[in-house]
Amino acid sequence: MNISELINKYQSLGINSTIDFDKFNHISLVHHSTKIEGSTLTEIESQVLITEGLTPKGKPIHDSLMVTDHFAALKFIINAAKKMNPITNEFIQQINSLVVKNTAKTYYTPFGVIEASNGAFRKGNVTAGISYFPNFDKVERLTSELVNTINQEMKKELSLIEKINLSFSVHFNLVSIHPFYDGNGKTSRLLMNYIQAVYNLPLVIVHNESKVEYIKALVETRELNDIGIFHNFMFLEYTNLLNAEITKFETMNNKLPPTFNLLF
Image 1 (cartoon, helix red, strand yellow):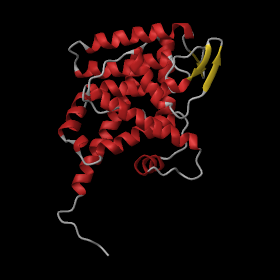
Image 2 (cartoon, rainbow, N blue to C red):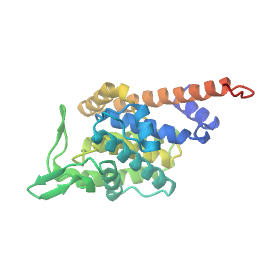
Image 3 (cartoon, helix red, strand yellow):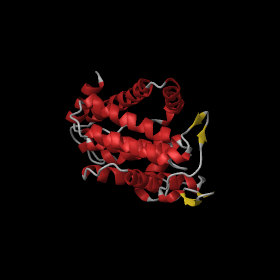
Image 4 (tube, rainbow, N blue to C red):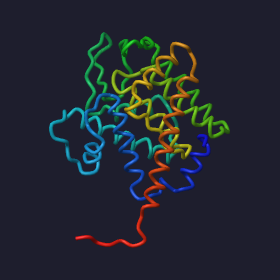
């Protein structure tokens, strides 16, 4: 099945209306997004932390804070999508401030002290691996241009594929601007999820197991100036996610017994 058929089947099965499905899907999203950024928590540890507030033993408190911050930011964008909040620089900064609320650092620059936890744009230049990002003095302008483009595109009558591609392109472009000192990857993935939520689409998860391919797709897209590379990677992630969720849902339903017997 192609991506349109998978989404239609996913929605027709009513998977996201299943009891607690959204919660556990969101926990999985948070787990993989934070794992990509270095969290050591397992998915079960993330689940227990989010649902019961129990911090895993023997793990850095920073990693637990990363998970709880990300979950709070995810809840924020889902609620914002229900209200159709407009995308602005301030909206993106608010996502970032939530996602790094308890883990961000303080930066001392020639322009003053920057508290990254406030969602402030960076006032210094940054690199990540072999990637160099725009000079800090271009960040606000580039983010504003991205915001304007997003809003113009979202006013159009877009096809399903165009909506998906828009969310992927926004993800790529924001992380390539790298407007913040901390949390750029998580913020970019959440902004992608926000657009998907506005369009009532299943939320994409970039799985930690795909981290190498993910980074490679980002780098090659920049080097070759070909957004199709990143789109292809993301469509594969999306297809794998939808297939897995559909299979899991159908298997669960097929295994349900006609009656339930208590066993002692």
